[in-house]
Image (cartoon, rainbow, N blue to C red; front, side):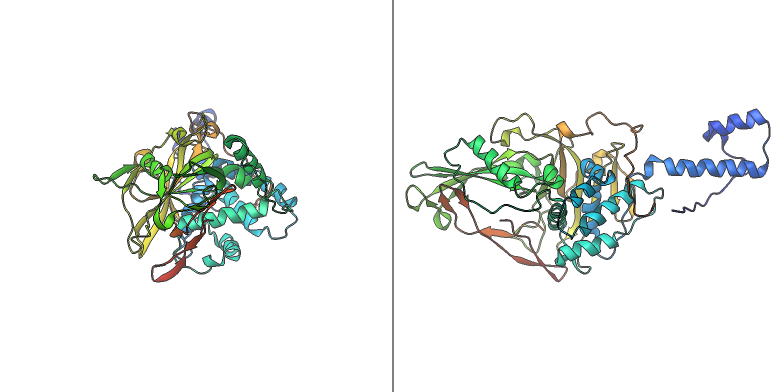
Length: 454
């Protein structure tokens, strides 16, 4: 690919900035003007091509209210395991082993990541071809209406997973009774059954497992069920002083709730609807933990919660929420998707920590600017991306002299919160569940369907 550079050459090249040039001038004593300019321009071009500042620090053009998409794409671009999966073209191996023909979304996503990490130009990239594929997969993203970033993330990860799923023929669903097993073993069995149908690099990175426990207050019967999760939607805790911590939100999500009145489930042992307690714990922690702050509450659909949530940049210790004793539940932050404004009109940006340099940057559509880590926390934080500390490359291993990411084998050019409410629960030997129905709400005078989680 041909690159053009505009270079302004001073009367005398800044030899102090280029020691090699200074030594060459001393050795030869004098150089012709044409040789001098040629050498100087060559040095500039070489410096531009090898500059680490261009690696991953490329903006994305706004195609028309697509800031929600750009914010998520930049966050995923700085997810180093996913980035390397694309740069190494490892995804093509999974695509080739897949009998399904529709693989365009993963291909376009990988090409976009490759362009963002290998471009020798800092000019913003257009994600138009990627947008064409995501709206084919999820028609709700057709057009140029503002959308919800967390909802877009869910659809995108689901689409990528489907195209690189290592399971090409899903087995028939069978009902197996694991209730006689201890909870830890039951959780492992349920996870294995999940992987029999859903197994991909996306699952390897983003999917964890929740344990749901429902206990009958009358007879003490306890039912447990284990479900995969791709992210956790956290309610924002309320406190008098207007600031809460992320741990407050996680505790609110996992706290024991009492199901009574119309919410009473039917106890399998009692054969009657009983008052029960419900509690969530985390059975399996994912490598990449996505935390969604529910700023758009169901009770206040026309407004947004702007509560400042104080979240840790590193060493987020979630061991107190583990189902079993876990020593591997400490996370480091590497990206934040922010939403500023209101439900009637807002804007998305991303704050990301570059996996090659460890420095933080603001990604505002086409503009990419350095930022201080002290600026990352704000009341606009909407989706938080954490990486498990044991797999993180951010913990003291990176400096500005870190080697660049591997170049791909193939290159295209080088060549709103969950608005849902549960129906009554039913308690049985096979666990408990709830059917969820979606609400609708208006965003910028356009109707946006909220995603159901089942």
